[in-house]
Amino acid sequence: MIHEIIKKSIPEYTCKLPISKKEIKIRPLLVKEEKFITQINELSESLSDKLYSLTQLVNSCCENKIDSMKISMFDFQYLLVDIRKRSITEETKMKIQCPYTEEPVVVTINFNELLANANAGKKTKQVKINDTTLLKLRAPNVNDVLSIGGNISTDDDIMNLIAQVLTDLETEHKSIDLKAEPINEKLQIIESLPRTTYTELKEFVLTSFFILNLNYQTSDSIERTVKVSDFANFLRFYSDTLT
Image (cartoon, rainbow, N blue to C red):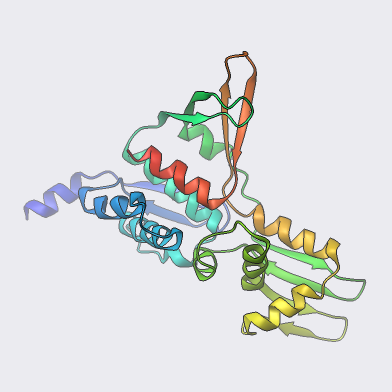
């Protein structure tokens, strides 16, 4: 009974996911989520383990019971930022090293602005191979990133992630469903593509993540921006804002 009284006092918010357009009911972080935060900050944990801990954190904070493994990476990261904003503060400061001057600088992060200015990109894409053939793919979800170990730092990582999200190959005569095809088969398709086609696929996948634009001023009075576009650095940023 006491538990129910406390539960009713916890605020509930609605987060509309930019890509799926689904409305998610969320609540702030509670003490029971501390174990996930500890796992995220544990240096010995792999990137994939930390990502999995984040999915457990999100699932725990969502009242309408979602499977965060199936959410697109952009929506997932957006949801993480919103949960953090609702749980701690709407603005924070953090120290980073400027990549241009190599000096330590303090960045002010307004989470309302961060979410409002987020560029969601597209849910799916079609890429022409030639006049009669095209490839279809979808934005990567959390499970796709986990399946390649959580890291997207090499060409092999990117190629494997693209293979995970290929959905269809269409010609003027037939449509081939690629979703159930083995990854090795899809990698062979990718390796056979023209470089320009592969560049389109790569650009779509890499811009399907939540991009942080951190603005600050260096000692030379120049206004600068550092872009955080890969998930590994997003995770470092996110874990720093939880403390």
